[in-house]
Image (tube, rainbow, N blue to C red; front, side):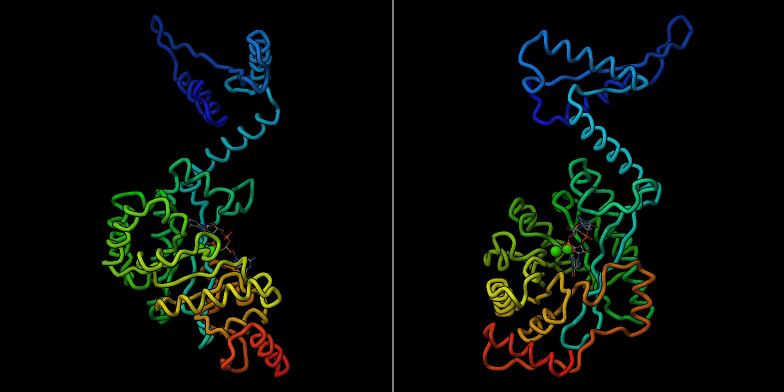
Length: 370
Ligand code: C2E
Ligand code: CA
Ligand code: CA
């Protein structure tokens, strides 16, 4: 009666099956029992007891046909979904110990100098059968199951060690951005975990940039603030990710120790074509600067967007225009080649800061060969 999610039912069924996995000892013998479970859900599958029992029975026989020691839902669709999820969950539990997780790094570039200033670490899962699984497919699951705690620690550890390696090979002050999830920030000991990783890798805390979303902060205002203060006193800095998609609240910017705003990539798509998106991006940059906060634009894919951002004095950029997220070795090559953002000379802002002005500047730049 208290079931709120179908997945809970699958979990319970799996628990029952697992609890029969070890043998029973009877009169000095080991007896093995296999378990087949049929599941039907009220009121979706039927609304009367007879019907439900019939469904459950049919599903149980189905489970036996499937080779026993398994469960089956009456509805084929639910069956497919829950089995897939459970398989993904089991696989994810093993991903860490089997070294299937990897970090890709997407360079962040200074818009004045064109130089790489750091990178955002982005998680990848190389599953032996499923291939490359995107983070959006497994991070929500990792969050629900609590696996994000050990996975998140591995991300921090790996990213900090890599950033320190780049720092030591001559790219001084290389800034590494790491995404945090709600569950991590809810851990009381989180600041200690980070301090331990920084000590162990030797990375200067000022090179660690922790990315948070507004929704994460909204849910955990007081506890988040306490943990952030602790991390801040270590020297770590914070970025507000996906800015512009949530409440975009000024009071949050003032209240939390935020160093950088990342303009969400959805605003970049139609820039400079869509006057609304352009106006919002422009307003975010101006607002952040007046609060002494640095601004990075995400999802920059075209030269037009780049010109727009330079014109409006955005501080940094990240996006396919410069580079996709790439493995560490590939980023090392970019650094060694001294790869920079390509343009002829920095755009000087004119007095007019209107979108029309930006557009003109864009056209002018194009004429001179960008
Ligand atoms: P995000 O933090 O907003 O990361 C940016 C996403 O945009 C990345 O997707 C990146 O590959 C993609 N992207 C970068 N430049 C461009 C561009 O020019 N155009 C387009 N269309 N897309 C671009 P990815 O790697 O699939 O990551 C998706 C999300 O997964 C991230 O969004 C972040 O929220 C989450 N995530 C990734 N790694 C971690 C992690 O280690 N921990 C946690 N908690 N979340 C992570
Ligand atoms: Ca991010
Ligand atoms: Ca983002």
